Image (cartoon, rainbow, N blue to C red; front, side, top):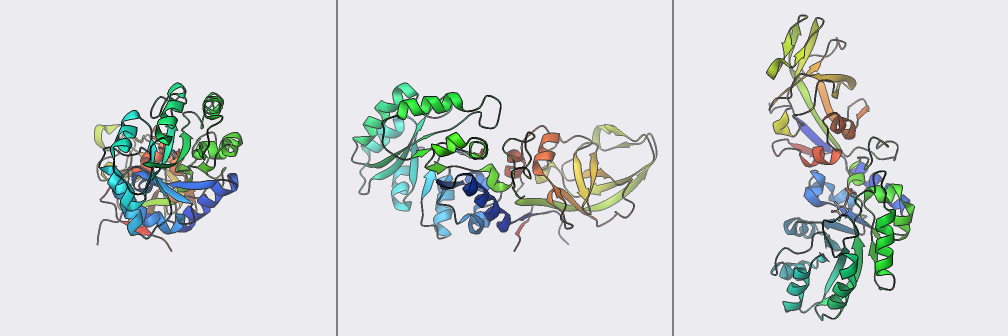
Length: 364
Ligand SMILES: *Cc1c(COP(=O)(O)O)cnc(C)c1O
């Protein structure tokens, strides 16, 4: 028998979460963001669940190629644009729309011999200071692009640094609105957090760009949970108990003896460790489900195993199903955000970090 760990992807939940974005932005078209191999889910595994999107947005050319190979004929947007001049050839061949965020990308377009003009999204750095032209330089970039025969329609986009938090988006919204006031073209502003939390950004978006919310994680956890937003988990990571230990008071568990029992305890050993993508830094107390009942992690996460507290779960033992995150067989959900928070990170990182060695199945 193979090691009992596996991940399960739920197409119906992906579809549900996509509909949730649509409900929040009924007038807008939706880029389903599938970068990082669909946030660790696998592009091929999410495609059916997300195919009612208006387009797919991603970064890697080979992921764009994979989408075309799956039969997707609609729009694909490269969120970081091209990385070198010869990528333009592939953009033409696969009909990829691409972000333009810097002068070099305009130079490359100007120098290319293309038969079909490129559809581009011109990116503004409205305050995040990652990618894009500053508001002062945005209009001249737009003018330069629009004079190129190699360029077809130009859309306008920016990205928020604080759509999920207290600082909010007002300053970036004002900056973008001011600098693009009389420019023609479609606009794209909202990521998941802005789509769910900021109707003003949605109203200004012809295209929204939800990512994390499609995958059933709240962009603003713990202020809101996925359930608060009506999102369903799209990935379950589960395994089984492969050994148990009965330990006495004062005994330690795991590397470094960081956990010491203050009472006699029953410990379950789970076939899941950091080499499977479970966060090594998850501390004692991190929630986990055994046979669909909540209990806690104890001791350090090791490469291939974690230990859990079975003291109050007398029925559980060898072969019991352990849900590290997602939905248990009895329907109980352990939110990936809750596990992430215990480990000091985000649902994004956990889903993206699912290890190659974990077999993945798609639910029907
Ligand atoms: C990743 C990304 C998104 C999606 O962000 P979420 O927070 O996952 O919704 C949207 N736009 C850009 C430019 C991105 O890089």
